[in-house]
Image 1 (cartoon, one colour):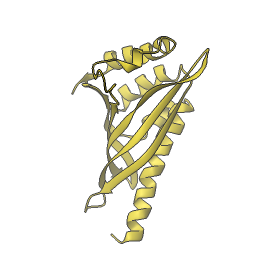
Image 2 (cartoon, rainbow, N blue to C red):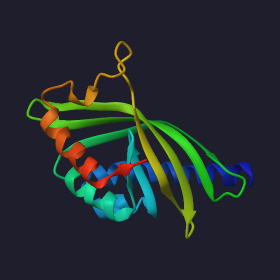
Image 3 (spheres, one colour):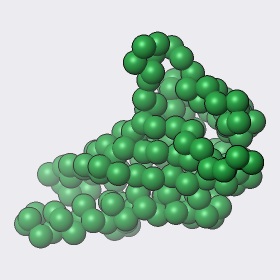
Length: 165
């Protein structure tokens, strides 16, 4: 793969990351779920949602809230076959409350992507939350009382639909 071909493929992966956030925040849940392979996994903590059906069901809960997800610092490596890649990006999620948008989450995505019919899709997207340095066991998602009623339905759906991984 030439340098130019490598940059073109990386740009396609970056566009996948953008499509993920724009479709989720725009409540286009079918399009969001279609950023994953049929057997793709979306995970957080020790649970994951396996397959588009469960990812879509989680998205249906997510579409009940107003959110903005931001991805920055994207860094991906494409393997020698040109068909698979791994990477990370920083993520920030803000949710709407009656007091305005509030940052609910900071962390990173650990990603595995692969080409399916010429298109890059997530085969595995794992969310890794930043920990509170003074107390890593502190649940930062529950730290702001204004965000608890927004975040709790997502956590409940995730536990209901997910499986230990």
